[in-house]
Amino acid sequence: MALRKKSPAELKALMGISDKLAELNWTRNQSFTTPFTSDNARPAVYAFDGDVYTGLDAYTIDEEKWDTLNSSLRILSGLYGVLKPFDLMQPYRLEMGTSFSVNGSKNLYGFWQEKSLPNSIANSNLMSWS
Image 1 (spheres, rainbow, N blue to C red):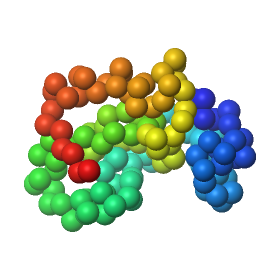
Image 2 (tube, rainbow, N blue to C red):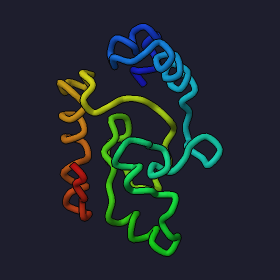
Image 3 (cartoon, rainbow, N blue to C red):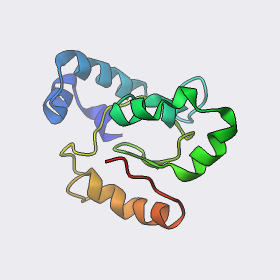
């Protein structure tokens, strides 16, 4: 993972974040490990805390509705690409808008568009919350 090679100062400059957040995310990057298990990762729907996820209020969704949620909602992640709500993931910070070149793509949008978006769009009902 290329982010693992970046120092806290480099993460701060790349992402425009505070020293404290840079240190936290440097530690996360160093701790990143596979395979993902319930001990080292959590479902994506519970891992984010922005406005959209606060509005979703995932912790209050009835267990009977989890299958519907998992088949109809997709989360676009800067690090993982397209996730289903109950895909396991480890904490990270890498916003889609971060100017970060990956495998010849100019940015993360370009990278993930080539890798996973066409297949995800063809095989699911995507929701837009913008």
